[in-house]
Each structure stands twice: as C-alpha cells, then as structure tokens.
Image (cartoon, rainbow, N blue to C red; front, side, top):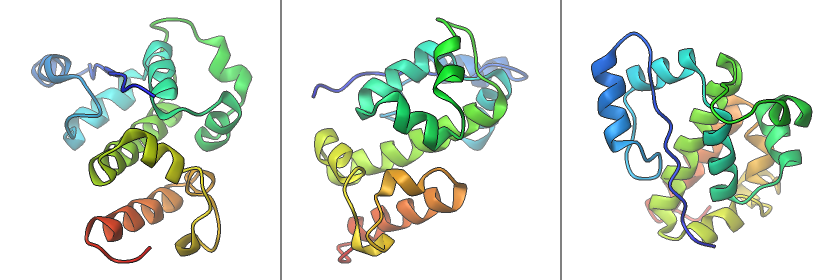
Length: 154
C-alpha cells in the first residue's frame, strides 16, 4: 500500500497557527501542538480529510464508525469539505496521533496497519483498533507502541 498524504487544516481563532499548520499540513510527518489540535477540533475535520485518512490507514467504514463512536450513515452523509462536529473531529485527531506514532516506530505503514488489526497479548488478546473506541484504549495502544519503541516485548 502506498503512503498517502492527509492534510487537515486547523483553522479558527489563531490564523497564524492555522496558516503554519496548513503549510506543513501532513499528519504523518509532524506532530501538532495542542493549540493546533484544539483549533482543528473546533473547526471540524472535513469529510475529504477523513476519507484520505481512512484510505491511508486501510480500514473500512464499519471499523471506522465503531472507533469514532458514530454510525456509517453519519460518516457517509458529509461531502467534500463539509466538517464533522467536535466529538468526531477530536477522535480523528487522536487516531491520527496514534497512527503517526505507530508509523514512526514501525518504520513501515503496512506493517503498522497490519499490527493495529491483529490480536495483541499485551491487550489481553484484543485487537488494538477495537480498543481505540475510547480515550483509555487509545492511551493503552500508545503505551504499547512506546514499549515497542524502547525494545520492550509487547
């Protein structure tokens, strides 16, 4: 699978932050500051950005809707640059953080995409993607990725 660039443009209260983020844009390359994330949550993630992210992480709408805590219909209804509300946008940004970290640690997008959809002993034989429907699950997956980064068997 080829790497895709997903650009999510934070906008809102601080135009300088939004412009700076737009120039650098790619969620896979750099971390956002918390203020950029706040601005993006408030403005909303566009359907186009969500579709690009979905394609990059190689999951279907069933899994994506489960992880985002919404219905497939809600995800399908939006078009183009229409944006999702704060709760979905915040979860998308949190997932982008997990995937960016995973891609950095694994060094290979396909390997990480496969890992995140495979049962993991450190999660009690659960699939990482399946526990990322809550912030606590996201934290647990990030913790495991961090252990892998430091060579701890996970």
